[in-house]
Length: 133
Image 1 (spheres, rainbow, N blue to C red):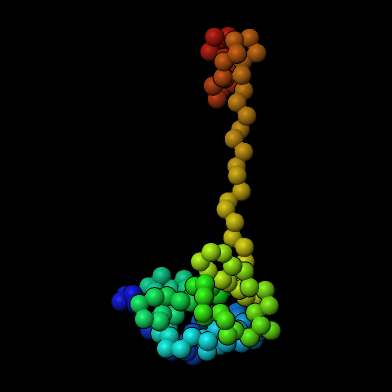
Image 2: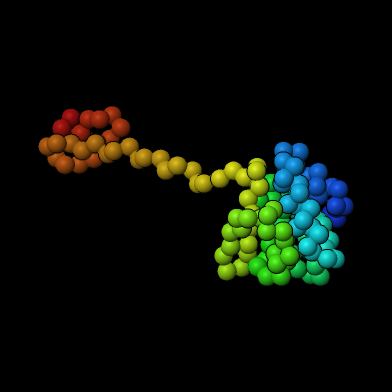
């Protein structure tokens, strides 16, 4: 377990985000119950909470989703609380009611370069071709 992280109680974990719905809190409780011997921590950044078993993070709680290492920790979760789990090769996750997509910034279009119709050269910011002036 990371030594710079601070340990939390179960109540502190459940009250980490006031914006979570009752259903979110039920899901988080069920997830915590499925992990025996877990230690709850918050890193200095405070951006997520982690549940450690031994020297490994097995479950993270993020403001908008829950994430597990793929394997035994999701087997005993109540299917009615987690009907739409997503997964990849290493993790499984469930979006909470507070999930918000954070895509990259929209691309900014480069201004189209103006070209002198006579000389075919890029015009300076003045808009007047140096060769025509």
